[in-house]
Picture (cartoon, one colour):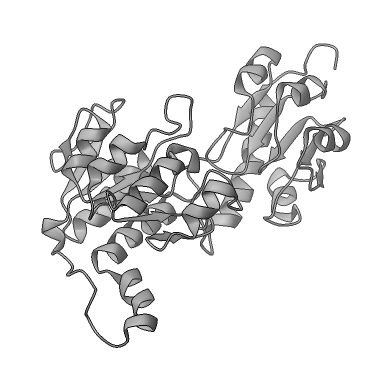
Length: 313
C-alpha cells in the first residue's frame, strides 16, 4: 500500500486521485504551503502530489520514506531537483494536460490585440461610440507573430495563428527540426525586432529568468505586443513598466506574473492601462483539470512502482 499525500491544491478533494491510484492506497489531502507544514503532514509519505508547496532540500531530507514527488502542472520550479536527485527521489510532472488550452489562450490574446478589442472596450466608457483614438488594425498578413520556445505549445500556437493568416517567426536554439513555413531567428532580440507580437513559451530556469528584458521589449517597438502564458519570471517586470510608460512598447497580455496574486511591481504591471491581465487561467477548460488530477496520480503510481524504498526508510 502506498501512502500518498497531497500537500496542497485548489483542484478538489482528492477523489480523482484516489480513483486513479486504485484501491488499497491511502490518499490524504491537505493545504500545506510552507516547509514546516509539509513536514508535519507528510512524515509517513511514500509520495507527494504538490501544487505550490516548496519541496526544498530540507523537506526532502525530512521525509525519510519519500520516493516520489509529482507536481500538478508543467513547471518544476517549486521542487529542488538537485536535492531530489541526490536523495534518490523521483520527480514527475504532467506536461500535456493543457497544451491546447494554453495555445488557444495565447492565440486569442494575439487576435484580440490585432483587432484592438481591449482598446475599443476600455475606450468606450470615456470616448463613447466612436472609432476615434483606436489604432487601425493591420491585416494579419502584415502583423507577424514571434514565438520564443518552439516546443509543443509553441508549435500548437503556430498552427493556430498561421490559420488566421499571421506570418510566424521563431527563436529556439534547442530545436533543429523547424518547419519550412516559419522564419527562424538566431537570437531573441532579433526575433523581437522582426515581429509585432512576441509570445513566450519557455520554462523558468536560471538561464531564462528575466530573458524578456529591456532590449527585447524595446525591440518590439511602440506598436509591439508581449504575450506571456508561460512563467512570470521570464519577464523583467521593472523593465516592462519602463517601456510601457515610455511608449517604447505598445501593449502586453499577461496570464502569469512574477508574484501571484500580484504585489509590488507585479501589481503595478497588472494595473497598467496598456496591459491585459488574466489570473493564470490559460490552462483552464472543462477537461483540463480532471485530466491533470488523473494524470498526476497515474504518474505517482508509475514512479512508485519502479522506485525502491530509500535506505533506512
